[in-house]
Length: 83
Image 1 (cartoon, rainbow, N blue to C red):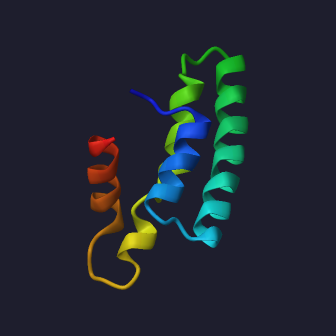
Image 2 (cartoon, helix red, strand yellow):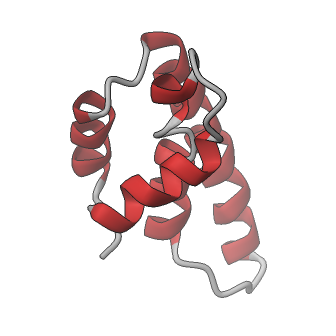
C-alpha cells in the first residue's frame, strides 16, 4: 500500500523525524512532484502517488540512526515494510 500524504506525516511523527529532516523531505517532494508531472505531461507513465510518498518518506529512518552506526536506508526499508 502506498501511503497518502497525511499518512506520510503520521509516519514522520511516529518515527520521530526531526524538523530539519522533515523540511528537507517536503522540499524533495516538491521537486520530485514537479519533475514527475513534467515527465507525465511528456508521456511517461508514472504513479504520482508513489513519487509523492517516496519523496516524503525517503529519510524516514534517518532521525533514528543519527547517533548510531545503523544505515538509515536499511532502517527506512524496515519501517516501510512494517507499515
